[in-house]
Amino acid sequence: MIKTIAHHVTPVLLAVLYFVMLVASSASAGALQGKKMASQLHCMACHGERGDERSAFVPKLAGQKRNYLSLQLRAFRQAAPIILGGEIVTKRVHRTMQSRTTNLTDRQIEDLAAFYSGLTCKSAPRKDRVPRPDRAKTCEICHGGHRTNPFRSIPTLASQKETYLIRQLEDISKGIRSKHGSARRYHRLMEVTGHKLTDHEIKTLAHYFAGVPCRRY
Image 1 (tube, helix red, strand yellow):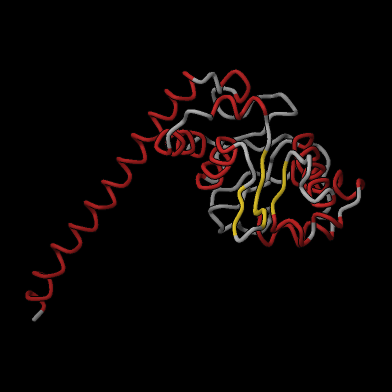
Image 2: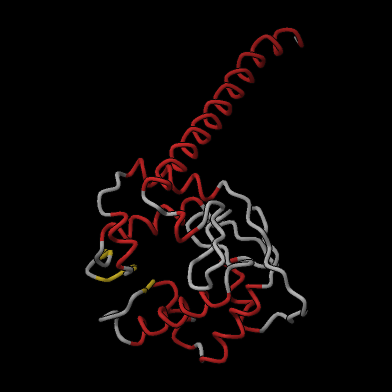
């Protein structure tokens, strides 16, 4: 009986192992192509070779969610709001990023996302211990922090640059209040909390998340 089961299970396990190795090999090849593409597009001039350029206004990409990076690159490439059912779902405007992504194929976008998501995120040095703001508890439900972020399409905020976070939260808040008119960034899910944030809360949240250590989920 045991021999019979083993006879059937072994080929299944081998097939599973082969599939896992195939997926890993494909991801590795994609990341390698993504690195080449990043060099050709001069992404590293702003984002750095390790995805953690020091400029306060440029986001840290190393270790960010792969699917999230892919979606953002697609939004830049489209250069127009993404509309479903007659309503704007998301919008991202950045002149430099649009010029870089205009001619990218879906495959190239996936490779770029694979490259940057595969880099190691380095936690920002922090001398002071910042208590978790009450507002952060709501943010961490989706974005993680001291909690996990299991959502592939939602960015992890831990150890992201403080100045960058402030600017993005301001853009999102303005996007909600201005009905998306001239806004640089908008996302429908952020309507739940984004429009309620005060300038002080935005700075407090950015300061807090910038000091949270990087985590791999």
